[in-house]
Length: 605
Image 1 (cartoon, rainbow, N blue to C red):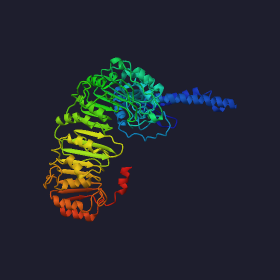
Image 2 (cartoon, rainbow, N blue to C red; image 1 turned 180 degrees about the vertical axis):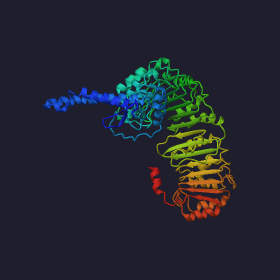
Image 3 (cartoon, rainbow, N blue to C red; image 1 turned 90 degrees about the vertical axis):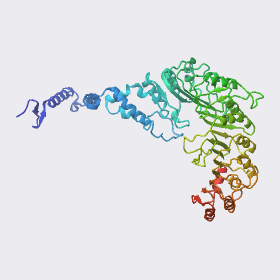
């Protein structure tokens, strides 16, 4: 017996009335609709063509109808009963996960493309190609489109800006660290960015001066929301390829109104110091390439006045941008007020050595700050660094570790207030520790373009440092200095416990460390009575300026104090290692036997 909610179809199958009603309705609708479009009625080729076109229109319309019915069906699913705001919140997690994906392979020869990079914004198809409700929630939520990555093409950046509406926008920097074909800024995109500037929170842009013109013009308007601004002109060729105009930062930037601006970066932009004097800044980075012609942003006095207006600075980086030296300047000269930076955590300076010394002399910085100073043209002017060194060392803990590195003609001095022995890969130009927590008291790099490193300058700097409490010494150098020279540098480090030596400096340094004779102290008493561990790296035993095979065993036997000898990547025989084990209680050898001549040739290239 049939119930009232079902009915038999023509084949005798029991079908619910609701389904039968829908089937009957659409069958009747089809018969009524297609009476005139029956293909059998077409008699001529023209009739056939017209009928096909009409049926194609019907198919498209039916597809839209099916999409509408599917949307009604999907709306009944439990997940789709959620409000659009919840979907948007979920899509935020999906979007943010894209930021952690590896960057697409960079191909500088590939032509620009406007297509959507699937590995950059995979959340877009994932959120918009499922159903109408998800698509609407994604497209109509401005905050989802407010994070604009540099890998997007110009057209996609414009689309993101359009959909962000009035949400706070972040335009991310180029994460590749080099000009990318997708980082190219078109005139239309620059105009859009300028239009949206009032609600942009972070803006990082790299482009040529003509393309950036709309953005530069917009920088004279108030920016009440802007927190980070990074403007780079990195695509410009060096001066040897012809004069190229630099973009100019407005003198009255933001009409003086950027109350939330905390991070400002200008790379190869023309500006005046007074134009970047924002009191709210916590991070300031201004840099020019080392090969660039001098940029006149103002004199030293104007620089100091500008910095004086930034009491909240936490990170300061000035590279090849310091003002010209005043006429007749000496390391005793005073060019303006001494600026206190009570919140500064990191300072990086790179410029001519006298400029660096003069700038540092006018700054008062917490002892806990991280210092990185890179000086050019150091053959004269090391005395300009002495006032800074004296102040820095007097306000810092004792120097426990010192690293003197001279690799690839870039001598570096790094001082630490603790025993640091876990230095990084010795092939790097700077022997930095593995751990980021092991930050140096200061790191001083002396730019050097070949030739001999001037010993008097190194001696002046090291003798200005209190090294009497030094426990760890790391030296990497090919300099042909004598044992007497090294003694004038480190002869007073009587508390030394661990020495790490790399390259041909091993021969004179081992003589100093392991023999009792000292040109400074005289007598036969050991200079380093507490030296317990010696590490040798990249030393060629039995060759030229390096250690002779019989030297090290004899000196170790005479010293009789060393407890541990570490040999890494050295050209040494297993027989010599066995001899060393007879005079030192612990010898750690990596088993390296091969000759290092090829490696050393590569180092010297």
